[in-house]
Image 1 (spheres, rainbow, N blue to C red):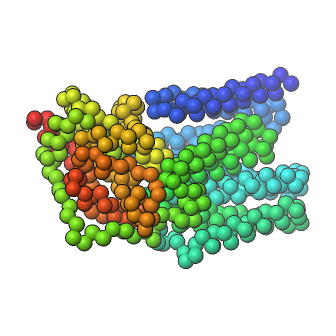
Image 2 (image 1 turned 180 degrees about the vertical axis):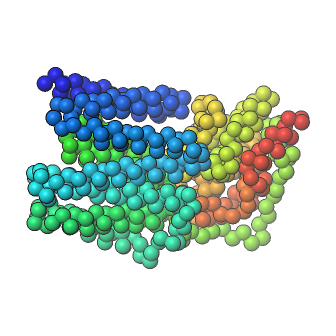
Image 3 (image 1 turned 60 degrees about the horizontal axis):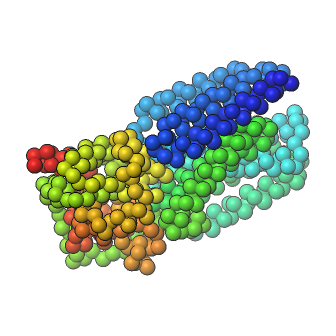
Length: 467
């Protein structure tokens, strides 16, 4: 009795730590404390789990310790070796592994049911099958997202004709099979469960296949919510409160973030899933035939920034690829020392995962109050002397506002062209990840500085130092 009370109290404390840690993650200034607090909560939950087998008389310490050691080694090595540019890929892999864990738990329980080792009523079978489906989709979907983000898999290699129809057929098939499995019980046989799992895994892969480009942050967030839901369902299977609460928190947070990003893109979730702008079908909506591109040198850029009253940096994935965030901060400090007001405009879907740019800039110790969201940035841009766009493309594309034929039409973007001057740091004139050309590059108040973003910024810093 006392042991059960201690376990429940420990789970309650762990749950409170999860909730408070999630609250602290809402700001880069407190995110580190939030991570530590949530980790402490998980530690408390693990200790309570060590006690629980004693109460139930089922000693499985070897499995628990083995899983902890393996997970700790993988997590430690990943955290030490993975570069910040590959953070979206790592998030996708870890998210997929969470879904895989839920799959194994559901398979284990269903196997015991079909083998006669336990009893599962219709609701219990439904929960187990839901865990299997959502966990499977999260696993293969996240693995494909990893392959796309890492550049190992091209959209054109995985997209089939009428792919949205294929996805609908797969979804209907897996749902119908789930209903039959719940109704038939053991008479269906465990082999049917494996068929159900296989279709779920295929659907997860096919679900993500047609989605790419600027939609990837939304997909990652959605898959994260799937993993949370699968963990919550697993918590129902085992009647484990901490799994249930943790899964609900992850699922709810991922769902809310997905909805917010869809609103930021002015698109419905269904449109993102079915339409998927940025997949292989994207093409330029701009005729660049006789338009003029005006180039700038590092010296030109340095002079313009040094004598400006206000400067705004717009970071994008190119910043992450070049690992240029610390050079941006160095340039920021030099301009601030000269009396220039420096801010950063952060688009909700810039980069390859939610909050990607915030993480990069926090790593470079950029103060959080300098980061402006989409609405605040657009309000400040008309009064900004110079905007430096570092590796961003689709999120500063005016076609989203004035070209009804563009795949991104209707998506809120940073209206950088309203500033007095813009400087785009880019390797070439190639389209962005969404596969469309950017009319910003040809505007009269824009200058292109071609080259690696970090190298270009270092040259600008050198020029500013000589002034």
